[in-house]
Length: 299
Image 1 (cartoon, rainbow, N blue to C red):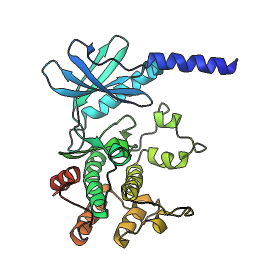
Image 2 (cartoon, rainbow, N blue to C red; image 1 turned 60 degrees about the vertical axis):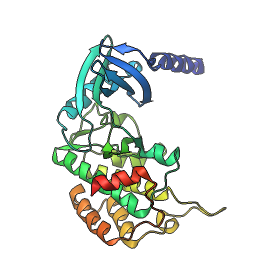
Image 3 (spheres, rainbow, N blue to C red; image 1 turned 135 degrees about the vertical axis):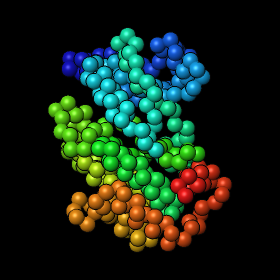
Image 4 (cartoon, rainbow, N blue to C red; image 1 turned 90 degrees about the vertical axis):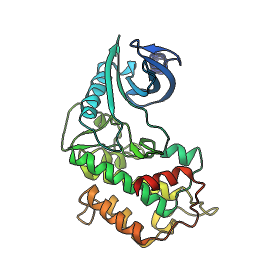
């Protein structure tokens, strides 16, 4: 019977959270154009407002009840305070029946996960540092404003003609804030796969975003790695042939001791120096329009 109960709950949740259809108008001024994706507590849509402007709508998931609404309101409060480069601008917030929605500018481009996994994009060492340098600039502004993102991962970093944009502030919080209703406390337990890593990323301190950035950099560098057949599992330091300076950057991002970076701004300064010293990536070419645009915007 327990199995039947779980099945019924899953069916009900799927029905409640079924995406809105394309063409549907919400609050008499936002027309849904396409479904972008779904997270633990929200759903994202590309839409167009009554003035013709493209926007992103983030709605609470009905299956999460009042708690989902509470988290969306909290995210809206934070977004209102973040008028910073590299972060989508908050435009509106409204209620529509039992649903509520946060409206931000729609970021054009692709997230890093899609670029690597779906489009087969390969990042050279210098290209990866350029992405990281822009991300550090955004994180530096965020931390100086008093907030931490806590979810720096490939799908939450967009790349386009405007450069790098950090999205999805659903887990963001004021630096040092400990709350009983923290959504991060409800997931990513240590016994889960990758739980220990995610717990480090969820701490309400800037070091969490630096740690996430270190893993993001590793994913970029692994984009061109092809393991030999039947090769045993090895550490990233053994598998990747990196410039020693880049390996040092990774270690300083991932470490928890005093040898690590004290801030995103400190990391950005070191990246500026490295980008002046490192040679161009051998595989880099002008036909890579996405990476070329990012490099141009960061110069």
